[in-house]
Length: 129
Image 1 (tube, rainbow, N blue to C red):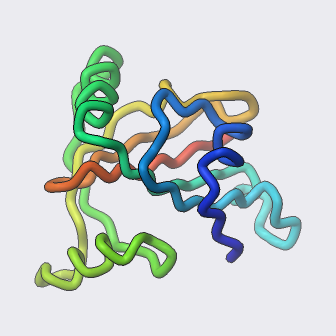
Image 2 (tube, rainbow, N blue to C red):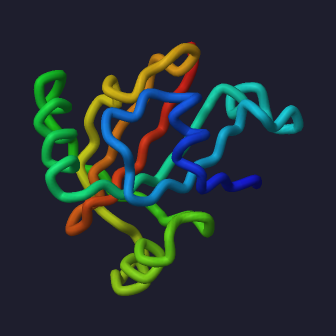
């Protein structure tokens, strides 16, 4: 899968409420060989400074209460998250899921934002309708 680490290019595709310190993302829309459902999905792992991370959470809480989640780390995630998952018994990370409304930009108008526990990393998964 083609991984992009350029936050400036990501800002052309989705709304970035703050400039991330680090950005790693997959735009499956650009992969014509991907299944149709995946071509309409964008996944990003973003690291924000603590002040911006707190502001993201405060804004997200205005839309909905957080929902606890657990998930597996993918091989394209930043090394810090891969190492963090290696320290857990089930090799999964935990976090809280919110609406990703702050990141929506056509065609991506649905999705979730996960704040990874113990970090200022977020996973943004956006879908088009």
